[in-house]
Length: 149
Image 1 (tube, rainbow, N blue to C red):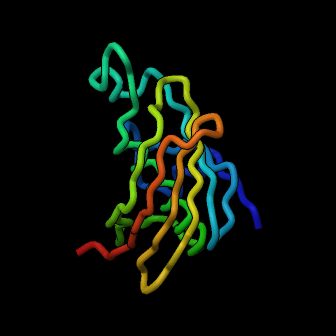
Image 2 (image 1 turned 135 degrees about the vertical axis):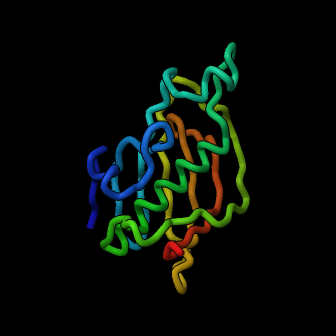
């Protein structure tokens, strides 16, 4: 079963808000398998004035964070739940992160994330971020949901 999500549904499934919400739309999600999500990169992003003013480039760490947000959306859709006040979705590991090309204002990032493993509440994902079909970044991500203390 394939599903899309507009920004309103993204906001229901992620606790992040401006300026840290980095997913604008979900193009396709197949629960328990994969997700394709979109981020429109604009010059109005709050990080561009400092990274770098005369040659704006999206920080790689934010590209990986956006990939993790796409993974969180996939997890919540796979579990049939939404975030609540009793738990937190943690990003707990990154392996094999590689950056292949800079991402600049005007680019449209497409995140393709697949579940590679889900055991005892530890989710492992393989992700890639593309601009115009060209790989901008890739990584393996590890995430988990834990009760708040």
